[in-house]
Image (cartoon, rainbow, N blue to C red):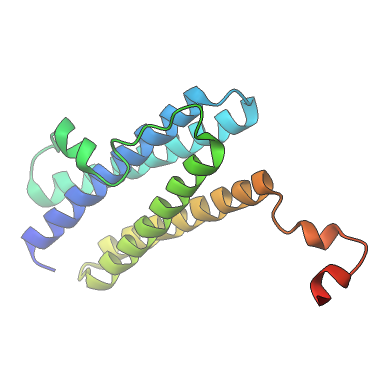
Length: 161
């Protein structure tokens, strides 16, 4: 991975983390359920931590602090998405689940390209954390839609038709 390629990957990742953090903060503020709001705020905090890690690497590689361009934040994957109150939890969860899956794939791809063992490890850790977010959000979505409700059914007849 060349210096320029590393820089580009870090910039893309930083903006994705800023966008995700903003999205989760926005959702935490809009959700009236305290538990749901807390979970989104925790996710926002995780994304802020990812951003700090990536910005540290950026400064180390580029030799200067990362400067945020708000237009680039809006152009990031979920940096400019606003969910209205009518859309509800499912739309927000679907957006977040998709973003977490893409983030994990991106970090795994970057880990494979990284020649520096420490950088590879950082990308792998981020991929693992995004997988954890994906799993949490998927479980939340299943709870909202009553996923796997048939396991609670008394009769197997439903599955045999």
